[in-house]
Image 1 (spheres, one colour):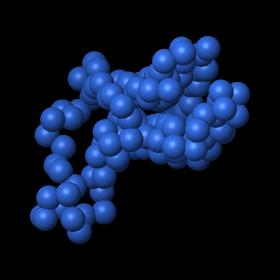
Image 2: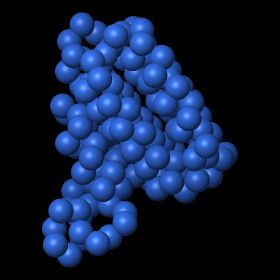
Image 3: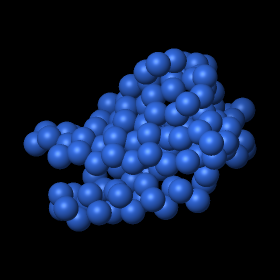
Image 4: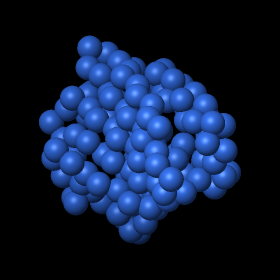
Length: 131
């Protein structure tokens, strides 16, 4: 099974991603835990792609591919930006970062997914969830 989305880089389009995950959850009868993990991690990755990857430029797109087999759900999020160094993202749980508003998205994605890959210099994030 596969579901593909290609959205312009506007925050309002996050609702299209949420709708696709809701539909997928109903189709696959995902547990509440898996559904919640997929939803939050995918929304964070897509939000990052829109804001940081594509600088909220509606002329640029974010491509989301969701693939599923009997063992796992894989979500591939790709932006048109220059990428980022994911190893240099500060730890939001460090005392000096606790008060900061930003910087928790990657932390959440890493905790909620069973595996996360950063490809093409960080332009692509691949989230994997065991079923």
